[in-house]
Length: 220
Image 1 (cartoon, one colour):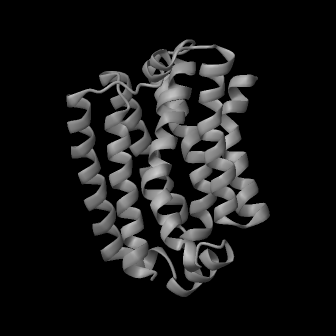
Image 2 (tube, rainbow, N blue to C red):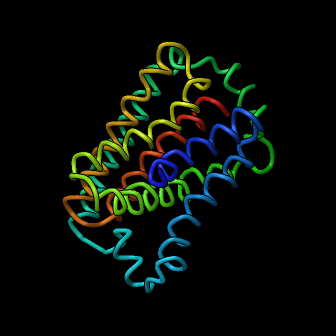
């Protein structure tokens, strides 16, 4: 029951922030606070683990091979996102409708630069620490590696589904969840095989830079 709660809370917070409150800044505050405080509280306060034990459990151990894997996969994701967005953005979304939606979510104005920076840097770090670090470690105690990788990818994709539906035109808003899921499977596999989180963080950062690149190119 507790494990299910930890898997579902990020989705519930995204739903509350975007669908109920309708504010990206509030969503960020709720969502990232949970991603940070849940593992920190569990390891450092509840389990009273040392800082070194916590970093090791979260996969924050340096691996040169893992870093190179992250750079290569991230570069592929970055180019695929920019290329796909460049050639198909007119079909993926209506610029005016999407601009109005983002404005209604307060993803606009003087603080837009800070929000973009959060999405490109803070978001990939905290999401990887939570899903491929914290939840991977918790699930790995009870399930096989393939189950751990798939389950974390499914629940990660679940809250992206909530944000993707209103952002893109039908049927692309459904189809777009597929590459999200596949990327998370790849990052989960990297975490399992190479016992490090740095590669998936780097790859995730490059992927999010690609997404923000599409925003800057076609929505500003």
